[in-house]
Image 1 (cartoon, one colour):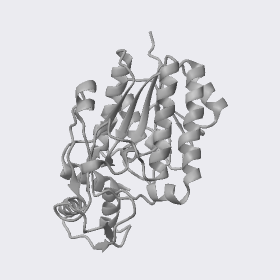
Image 2 (spheres, rainbow, N blue to C red):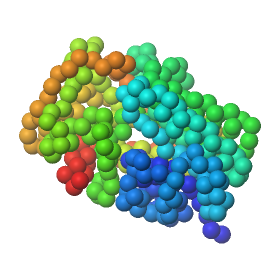
Image 3 (cartoon, rainbow, N blue to C red):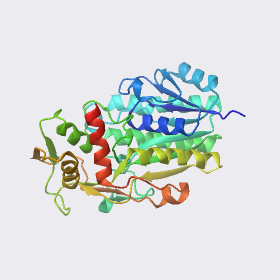
Image 4 (cartoon, helix red, strand yellow):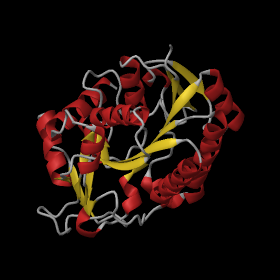
Length: 325
């Protein structure tokens, strides 16, 4: 019997494309839906690519039925925090309203499993800088709020239908495919590792540190960085869990420890073999001093074991991809 299909929305983007590749390598029948506004056709390495919007109800229903989809992995979203502050309605339209439409289609088409790409931004600034899944969710920007609204809809839909879900809350995603086939190509990226390696190859004149007076060991912000390849593998583990009858669940995706901005930049200097031009700037509004994941649940419930929990590996893979670009 042929396995049912998996629809990956936003599968031409940074994280979605790594998941599509791992699903394809695992022999899954995968279909990507992406409008290519921020994704790249060539990043979709397996299965069929359908170009269109997640909020296009007629298109989504057609894809779900025609490809006999029983699992949706939903990545399609805008993800740049400062942009969400400047243009909140753009984020609520694309991230929240389109998710509502997608969920409606899933219920109508009898989709059974839903894996949702969420974010540590739902926690805002957690006490002590460490967030567990039951920590208060108090987002401090429209991006985080748009994702939390989607989580809430998903919870309520799962309570009233046969749909079961896993919400994965990502911490700081970095790195690229270790074999250099795909990577992060996002224009105007704001993620530290991406910005730093763009500086190394001459795309940016310098790299900025925003805030050097935090109450951290070296005064700069500390984040939990996770290699995109490990994050992608958590999605396949979530799929196995739901197929085995697992109950709806929410899980953090990080390594459970952090690196400061200065430590990341030092790792980039090691990988590049040369010093960076670093500018020290004032803090950005809304940046927590420390943000680290509690990750017991994803390891215990999904049996997830990361392979790339190493800052130098993350940076080396990111730089290799940037040089290829």
